Image (cartoon, rainbow, N blue to C red; front, side):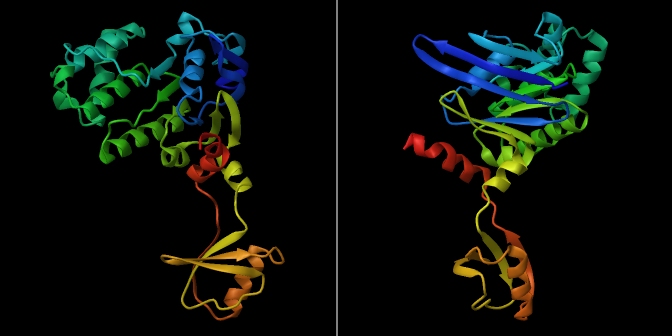
Length: 298
């Protein structure tokens, strides 16, 4: 049973279609990347999954059922628009929001102390939210998202305002959630984070699906007809290679289609070269994104 299953959802405002017949699903223990340019419909899609707004058409099931108030307590949502009670202390904020998710006081205090310690925020627990930096506030927002141990965690731009150290910390904790079998929706503009973390992606543009599926399979579909080589010496003329492109630290060999990458590798070894690196050139997710939607935003 998928953790989330979305079938042909549509959402319009006035005469503009914001989400146009989107369908996708993903399982427990997966990180699902929802990506696209500004205004593509990502946040609207998330809000429909969370039952904050209703689709005009289509069907959504979360954790095997349509969302009810009981089901919502099994979800954690970090919205793009942050909002904590600025006059409350950190610990009072965390405990109050945990109580809204049905947690009893004692287990909430234990869990809060663990998460505050895990994130290096324990010595700030008595401070008011307004005394925290933007990045520290973001960490507290993440803590209140997962305090009740939700089965589905929805993260909309979770890395905004974080320094590199806290970005890595958050990524570690997201991966830990996946290892514990949680389902995670990750929406972010930072393609490198999606590429590093996600198992499956949905790329949307103008409310429609552009790419959907397993990330590695998508990257494989977009791989180029070239290989990257770092070797001790100049490869010279190699059969099956139509062009050589020099880069810093490596050479890109463009294949002419007459030989496979394995055959080219044999040619290189046969030429007596010491091969330090050899791989089929695969585009980054950012390159795929630009190829897929960039032409629509020129």
